[in-house]
Figure 1 (spheres, each protein chain N blue to C red):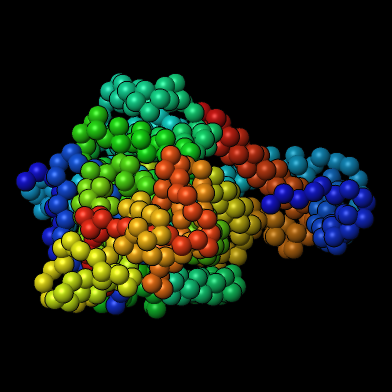
Figure 2: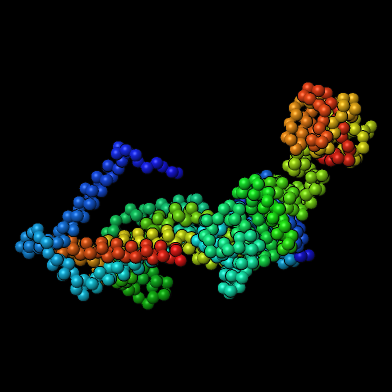
Length: 344
Length: 284
């Protein structure tokens, strides 16, 4: 199969296991985000794909060729580093042309390709500027253009947008995704920003403790998290304990019907997104609680409710503003189809 | 960090001590030397105050021209050898583990603690026929019989490079440690082998540091006068050797002073030329 395949890839630094037994397939032309908290092994995994670190065991295949022990410079990839690593002694054009020069491509062709790339990143006419004179966003684009100069088989980006301010970052996420779709290039991005991952990726790979916890399309990661870590890490969620027996399940002291609980599971956790918690008049909900705090953000309203000794958050849109105030009793309704049953 | 420029006279207070030391131990002796270089030599005694150009005129001969040429050539050779050896070495050192780094730096510092005399005699032993390194080559079957490697130009060069190398490494070390290691990684992902990455990224990025180091080692080597005498033939003697000879053994202080002034001028000229060339290269 064409694309990138990781088989049982493990990386140990001394006694510390940074990446544990990772299995991952990235089909040709897809955009994958490695997402996780710092120290989860996502950067190490990417460095192994790039050949900058060698796996302790396991195999990395690119287009059906074993590249586990192929040195970095023979892998034909493009990588954008967190620090960008633009060469300070070269101009913008020379930076972009570096990979072409190293491969002995003629001056004319180099110049043509550099002009092409500069227009792609909207920096036409910047070829002769020193990189030190560029703004953060411009440097970012130059680093991307430099990595794409040889039309690599694999495009890797390690926290590429973390140095930019929030507004620019959002704009670059969209731009990067559009660029990737236009070029149809297999792309892997390491990020700790879930919004970034949700914006750009075909597949989000959530990692923790050196292991892949879930690899799925963004919406599935959000709607159907595989475990409590993923549910909690991606977006806001309510993790509510439940117990079950032959007669049925109960949540926060009230019975709930319609949950698809695997047979034999006596207790577990429900993950319910705040927008799936519906507020109702007291007595009209299956669960009764008390409002403890209201956070009105303008765009959304978060209502904090204490029920059965737990805090539950409900999010509403302004056009469905709940008619509640702090200290008031409210009813809560959960639709069983919105609840994800997880092991605790 | 931005600091405010000194406002009052008293703000210059901290400068008094270093300025005083510089004046007493550098400006005054140097001015004295310049003055003496124009004095008239008194063959019977020492010298008498005067203003003559005889000393400089005497210097403009083929013999002294050759010595000056050789001194500059030797200093440039030492500087180039040191930098060529030290840049890759220091690069690898800066990427090595902490323990290895400390060990190497301690070893280099201990070389610095050796005096020029000890270095000279140690190398003259190592280069000798009876106890030298060629005996090892004979034992290994590479050479037929042991030979003396000194006095020779190679011996002078080796010992001077040995002496200057620790300085070179210590000057390069901070710059190489500060060099972003992802620069070479980026070069590798872009298709450069580690060796190519070193020459296309590390060396050009450190251009200014390397030029500054070349100048430093060049000046350091120019002052050497013991090693050429211990390990070289008379034709390997540097201008510094002749200056010492004139000043101490011939008691011709004015001529020695004139040679020293001339050496300083030539050195400054070469340094200025290097800096100028470096500037031009940067602008291009």
